[in-house]
Image (tube, rainbow, N blue to C red; front, side, top):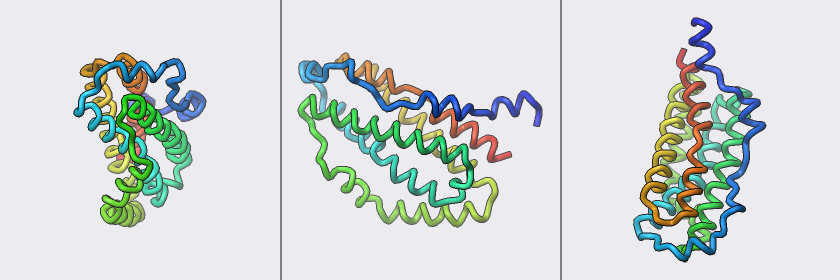
Length: 192
């Protein structure tokens, strides 16, 4: 591999750890959010996004039950990423509460129960495959990068369509790419 190709596969995990933060909307007065109409479509989309962000811990559990835990960089990244994603879900709940569309306190359990067998099956399959192939990180992290980029695009669509200024600012703030960058660079390195 050439030096240029290798440098494109590098991800500065130390910088990521140093800059990792929870979503901070302390500068937003969420009481203003209720003054703007939020459509049923927006509520449905925000609830789905809240489910995705809150479900991150299940993905983390799944990947850490594989040989990925043996890679210090991956484990460091996933620890920070799960922390950030938890607060994305928490912030979405705060926003939904503020606009009068609260999420049930049992929502996360309901979502997990609805997919528990398929999640278990994927976890078992992933655990077996990682023992059989040194390229396990490649497909798993490629899947993660695609999921992260899809979520980012979802926030972008919501930001463009919403009439709620505080929500638009929150969406724009979350359109970060560190998760997708880590996964794509690590996936490329794992495939080689």
